[in-house]
Length: 119
Image 1 (tube, rainbow, N blue to C red):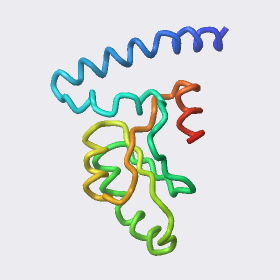
Image 2 (cartoon, rainbow, N blue to C red):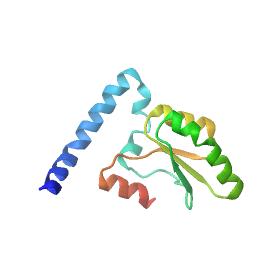
Image 3 (cartoon, one colour):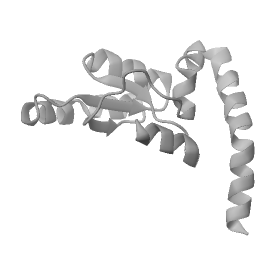
Image 4 (tube, rainbow, N blue to C red):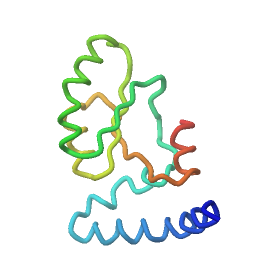
């Protein structure tokens, strides 16, 4: 029964998530940028064999800076993937880590996450 309820809710989720993002975009148009990333669409030229850090917000992204610097010292040839959820977190990551690939982590629908992880 719980699986059926979950499946039903995830069937409705894309509509609700898109509606939520459009509403947020009324105040912050950046919510409409990189739209497909939020839904697990393929990313052009995804980094491979990467060090992946998920820092949800601006604060977490800034807090991750010493960690990224330490990891870069230990793994100088490894590419970095930095994921966030809000546009402000993504913009902060792009400014702090211009040589990293900065992307949105997709919402938690299994198909979206599977596509993201398959890259």
